[in-house]
Length: 329
Image 1 (tube, helix red, strand yellow):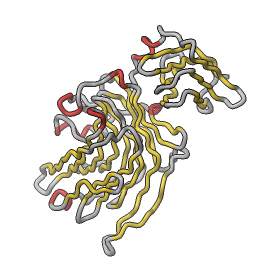
Image 2: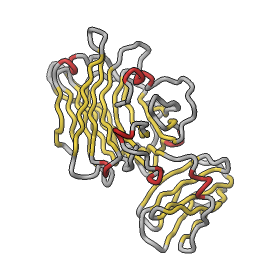
Image 3: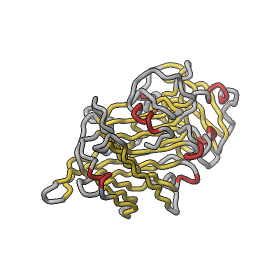
Image 4: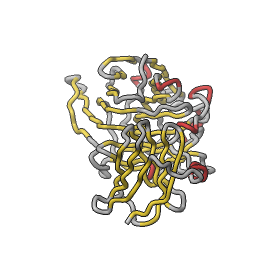
């Protein structure tokens, strides 16, 4: 990931204590490492100035060697820019980096798109929906020779010159991952072979873990509750913890009905008006426990993974927040 001060990038996976950040984000990281291969994934990215949604690989061991490959979609300007980055150490102890922004004429946040990253000893290439947008060869590829883990994350940068001013009104925002495939690479035959596919029907804890850290110039703390599975998708949320104090002042409008259905263990929401909805469920301490968004006027929220008790449901309809208390039993 691009940061504003390169010496601090090595703090990426550092767990040192930082001052609490103003926002919450999410990161899901792999428990294994791979050397070369193809990552193909279907994702709907985040739209909102200041925010980024990503997939990347990184050397995550105990040594000081740095190697990283990035897919980073900038949320500003209708989410039409993908930053493709390579960072790696070289023989002289310096840093090799190759950064190129890919501009497309459509939003990467309105619908799902298939992103592909191919990593071989000879080239590294990036694709969107099967169209190759960048291919890199040469020294920066030759130095990419260590096994790496792989990660998804959603975060907010402190660099407005790069990502734009932070748009708090766009929060909560969500990165969706419908599926991910990994194919190994045979250096002898120069062919890819599919090894596994994750459809995110559940959170595979043997493959993935959730982060609880931050890094330099990141305006979010990664929170486990901001990464979750919903409707067969991995969701990574960016949220504003200060939002509950303001939205509690606005009651649910008459055209909404909300109720808890004990038989199905769901909160049911019905609206007489069409539009876009963002929904957050908070416990009484103000902690976010569920977040989702939809363009349906009737929808449900599964409560199977939360405890019984009093909650606050907050609904954003076409840019305005409403909320009410609801009991889950």
